Length: 239
Ligand SMILES: O=S(=O)(CCO)c1ccc(-c2ccc(C3CCCC3)c([C@@H]3C[C@@H]3c3ccccn3)c2)cc1
Image (cartoon, rainbow, N blue to C red; front, side, top):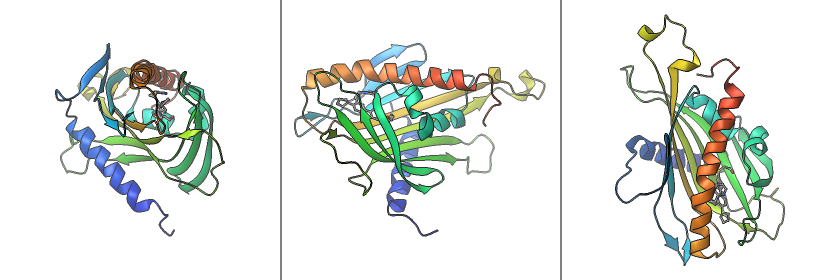
């Protein structure tokens, strides 16, 4: 099928996220803002035109689910409202391919900021281990990336955020020796790297935004991973 308008951009943005996730360079420029069990959430303080645009990075290790399952539920627009507690509405405006669509979503108002909305493409991709030896990295990735407009985008008075978000997952399985061949959920672990670059779009007090970020991201990641565990616990493993 003819390539769609965003084909080139999507490949570039995804490649960039994979490069970053592979490096996982949590150096001292990242400030730890939340540390709970296996979940660590970091931020960098950055402003653009006086607006807080702090990049956020979270690493989380979850037993019993795979990277494919985490990415499937994070990407699947049909279930977004089931786990994303900060959304008022979410809809698909367009499908570029079976793994790529354009979403329009309105976030609940976060006092005292004005209501936000987002228009973005979202793609799920499996990036298998490309080098011959078996233990190369195998990623599942979802990227949500803002686009400036879309002919089906509803007119609204909300402030439009600009975001570049990626969920990159790597699954590890215990060696077959520890289980006689049949892999169960007890033998799998998923390492999640979540990176969010959100420009709030309209001015909000830096102290307010930083408090919102500090409170909302850990809550969001906990709620989402719990949702995936609940959805998958009685289902066959999606490898
Ligand atoms: O991972 S996703 O792609 C999942 C798809 O929904 C995603 C997550 C979060 C956002 C997001 C959008 C707006 C805002 C702010 C900006 C000013 C007032 C609201 C925030 C702030 C950080 C706080 C926040 C964090 C997590 C969830 C909701 N709220 C975050 C966008 C996309």
